Length: 269
Image (cartoon, rainbow, N blue to C red; front, side, top):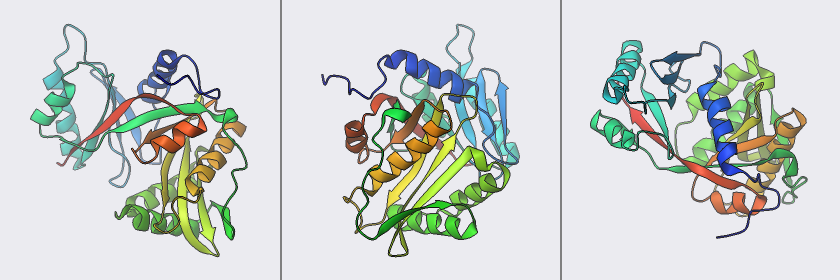
């Protein structure tokens, strides 16, 4: 087993418990028109069609818990709203067979990712950029279009919903979101966003993507460093990320440690 990284938090079990409490069980709405509800041992987020809709947390491990009924109740809730949704299942969630129950109810699992976290203030600062590249804060519609363009090129997916979410957040809660785009001689080639959870120790790193041809030049590291500095300056102790397999080695070298896995279970109503 590798020794802990000198910049990494030490007590991983305590850190995961803190994350579960602050970010999942005590989640707050993350955009205009969104609400968070605590219903029957489930914490769920509901908002506009372009927002993230789904289950953030479930406490369904008691002796009297009717797991299948709780799952069916969430399907009924989102079906009534006409919203596809996601059950965000973490590797340590209980009961242990919850994933099997979700699949039996019609959910389709996506690719697992790894929840990783690090001390924001301890991460490297001033990561050098390739020649001709500059970072620019996203503050308006033109910047959001650049983020959407990068995501479409980097991930090959329609990122219009992310653009709408970002515009909503920038208009309604600019202190709760920060996005950045990397420009190479004026062309957007990498982008990412930072979601801040007011009143918590955590800020989330999301959407880090780089277009083909600019990968492997340190842009991902630079965007992590840039956002971690913002998080630390705004009083957040930790930054966390749902890391894809391609990102994990980079994050480990920066000082992130693995806390658990997370798998999205999608349901189409």
